[in-house]
Length: 315
Image (cartoon, rainbow, N blue to C red; front, side, top):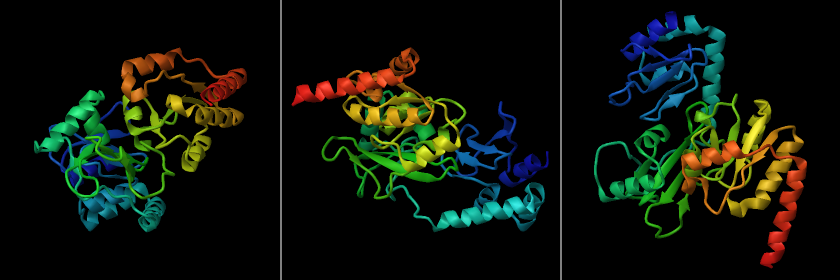
């Protein structure tokens, strides 16, 4: 296969084919690691390094980062075709004009070297929430010791193209505001890089909830569905959605359920206890999801009545 032969020469090592025929894993040229961490889809041209969190939506970007020769670029153009390369390149130029989200300058990877007190406390905090080194590497979780995000754990979110679209800064010591996030729009699709749109999706509030759920979970960074996410749900013709908002967001869950059901989507409202998904743990959350039946319009009416009754009792 010509494209594989070219990639092997440019990257400098041989790719290992995954179960999906178009997916290959390479030793990353961006960072030293004991396992192949650069994943490339030869059909879509999307690529992502799971350690350095560098990625893109076409191979021309990858070649540019690797400072490939003109001969290699010419060979790539011959393989993927002129029209596709030009359209991808123009798409990339348009992306550059958008407001770019960047990780804090003081960001440090939690899987990297160093053993500062703040890093140790960050690791303990994550371990207490059931997040281990596998999740830390997968989601590219880091921390800051200085700057605006000092003493905070940083959890990045990436688009389907492997580009940073948002991040969350969680205070380790509970000394101030619990969360401090970048001053950019939340109209993004959280963890889109990890979402399989051919499978049912799960909507939850925060990044730690999504990490705890693990399976196709999208953090909303709040209690409502962003416009960009709603648009993609329609585009992908998603037919099955689980809603796992916190208990105190009942009214938001009802509105969300109603809207999705009116658009022909099968909704499963997961009735949480007083615990958030991140506090419940993976096994408990998954069992609860498996036990949840599809929500009907009569169920929705009961939810509305229960919500009004509870609100009346609180008054």
